[in-house]
Amino acid sequence: ARPGYAPSIIPRQLMRKVKESPTPVVNSGPQRKWMQLRCGNAPLRRVAWYDNCPDSALDKLLRTACRIGIETEYLLCEKGGLPLAVSSSLPTAQTYELVPTVRRASALEVAKAAEAGLSVPGADAVVVVDPVSTGAVVAHQAVHRMGLQVICVWSESIPEELKGFVAHGMGISHAGVLSHEVGEVAKTAAAVRAIGANVVACIVGCETGVSLGDALAEALQLPGNGTLKSGLRRNKYAQAEAVRSAGLEAPFQMQVDSIEGVEAFLAAWSPSPYRAVVKPVEGAGSDGVSICDSRDGVVAAYRALEGTKNVLGLTNYSVLLQEYLAGDEYVVDTVSRDGVHKCVALWKYDKRDYHGSPVVYHGMRLHNVEADEPLLRGMVAYVTAVLDALDITDGAMHSEIMATARGPVLVEVNCRLHGGEGIWLPIAEACLGYTQVSALCDSAFAPPAFASLPATPRSPLLKHGAWVTIRSPADGTITAVHHEKLARIRALPSFLGEYCAPCIKVGCRIRQTVDATTVHGCFNLVHADAATLEADYRVAQQLIDEGLFAFTPAAAGEKDVVRVETPKGPRFSYQLSEQEQVQNSLWGLLHIWRPLEENSGAVPLRKLRAVRRSGWRF
Image (tube, rainbow, N blue to C red; front, side, top):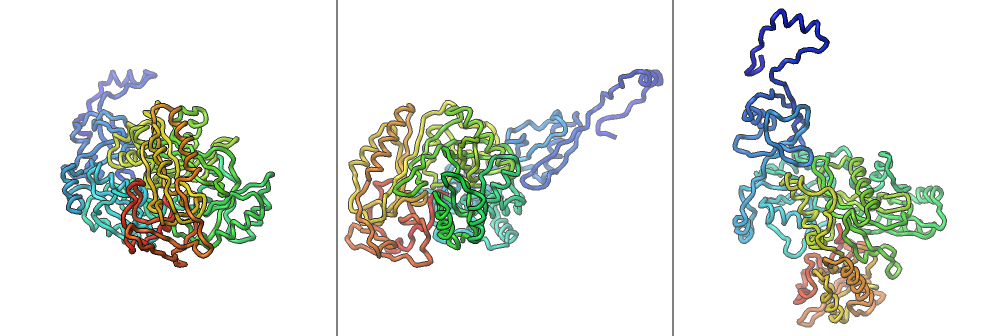
């Protein structure tokens, strides 16, 4: 019998009326209901109840189904993180998520722990796989904004030199530091559990950690994208083919591992005038990307990549050949939670030819959908469909899209945060009031805050923002810094801040800017007036093109020599070894990026061993 319900005897007269009536009599007793319940990445659980049961009884059912103790608070959320009241009046046949409330440390506890160089005891923890670049910013916010502990897990793919790629002031004390071994996901998951903290999320910090992030979240039964289509999230060829199979626009392409494959591409793709793109299948930051204007150029670009290591330290066993997509390039930054995708920023790239290099970042501007309604709203819808095609349900994504004559076309989805050590974050914060990093933290640790975010960047913008890169036209040794030009940029009404590589000072070697990984810093611009911002953007670009520093060109035998002049006078020289020689590497010291005026003082000789071998935009 149903709890609290005694079946009654139906009188004979009523039974006769029921038989004679075309409309059946509905029993007015309690209604049996059910829900599907999601708890992290564990299999869905089914819970049934009657709509007249006490709310406390339903609460007990939910706790039992998800093994949540009476001492733990939780939220019952709709898809996307909107919380609901636990009540027997909830509709039937719905899927909800049960999210335990995160245990956080107070600001005072965090400050005391940081002062002592410790993590915060008693707080819940988040795993960050490869916490470098913007991933280091996420780890820092998890501690200082959310009051959590952070467990660092190094993937098997990350080069040792990249592990120090943490922006100035973003270092934290970890609750644990683990190094993953190939094929040992279960072992790594067990090591995470052995630390003893209650782990509530697993976040990817850098491109190298994408595959392990999927596998580790699955092993720890935490929200994530699963491993079934994990390969699509690193292999750009497979990614585009999955998008095409979903009926969406995708570039013509071939993945080749031999010169015969190149010849097959050349036979199948012959536009006039000729243009094609050659790039690593797995890469970042425009590393190794060539735009070829001839068939011979495609062959040469393939041979230049074949068997080399890319900016992430991964060997280019195969190469991606694609059609050249003509049009403006945009970035669509998203954060997803339980299949609900939110576009948290739209950036328009300013890529131009620069001293013979065709894809050099000159800057980017922040937009909302209303800046170009039909184009950008359609682009956001396209990206949402792309994420669904790749089975992406959770986490931060950085998608690059070309606005072509046939509509938006995918360049690639980078299944991690917008990179560049987060130097663009002050622009997003000033213009939107939130960032991709804060949205990711909300999605993982504060579902109601994520649910309250708009589906597309806020309109109107609080301010208008842009980002301008610092570039060098050639290799050489800096002989003078033009402080008067720097002062003019800093005096612009829209100037917000600057970030610069430590190599921008007299006596240091500078590398020619050929792609994103050889950009040497940036200026952030923000203003309430769009016209003022645009005028300042043009002035800053002009001053940078004129040159922010003077240098002597590198001699023939000095291509791989790094020189740093210290205030005490001695000049050190260091020849890169063959092992450390990576094309398109960003010159400068690995450990730090900071405002230009702070780039002074002696540079310890040991720091010269930490030559930046990897790109900073990932």
